[in-house]
Length: 491
Picture: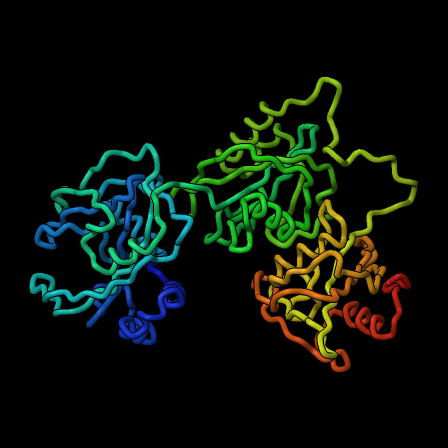
């Protein structure tokens, strides 16, 4: 199935957001996307979309091939989109294989651009009477790949390609591409931009995630996999990435995650994807975790792996990890820092949440939760988060920076209200701590747009609707100088 119009529009819009000065040059493309014709069909005139691959090696050189059809010009591998290319990037990957003999498994998306194009070039094409084509234009969408170690030798498509050359950036044949490469920090060095966690209990069990089955556009649909994901702008390190992913996907905190290995896997387009793996000990109940993606989490023993829908690479990885982390002769060990006395009979876990109460000129800062948020989608809420292995006030300072780019000193934080609540009888109780920051630096920014779509100052006397109920209760309590509220215990 050829790329959908919505996919193409997303790619082009994102490109223009990064290159606003090219909007006039691509006005014809935008107009074509508004029309009903298929923009990737070569029969669509007076213009249509083509795709090219900018393949960069470790010496910062770009692959060029000599096309017979172009009169012997040296060009990047590329061509028309075919009916079975489901994305524009897939078309570029296919062209590299067809024209240069380089398979998708030898290509790696760059950490700088990932699946975004580096350039969209507009060039005129002469009439081709043999094909019945009049003069027209190509909008060539160009994607960047790094050449992986161990890539096969160049194997050109004999009927179309007569040679190849690896050219340095300043000798690249396309002027627009040459300019963008000169401005980009592309060095050909392959680094991981994804992170996953191998979580085990020290007793031979592994925490695995069953992914959604009917979503072919995601990685490993319907498979048992590891928790993890891609690096985002707010992540300073890949350790930050995996901690955030565990927190977002499952409300999970693993205290002592350590680097384990960098694994090479196959991505959705067949390209090579390096993943930084971390490992850590946890021994909780997966059924009590608030899973926000996929079907379920479960403890699994290695003897069950052969009977589960799991990528061979995942199974091999876990079996290797088990060899590297054998069970101690005297039995399993507990995670570092988790040893504690036996809890008194009848006690249950209480989840601790921290909340930022910022008031300025009679107005309080609230964020509008994303409609698809796992909690309180479409409602207003104060900046909030859950404590990891840290003090509550330190957690508040961290969350303020991660979610809104606000800098707060611990000395300026004071506890002003506590809500002890139970939303459902089947869920653990929650202790919601509200802290006031007397001073802070910065203005609220949308650092996590998948969670919050807007920050706004609201009058404390006229709070918006819908608002998270316990948030309204806490704000009213703070204004009335009450320090404690209980909710939901009568049910």
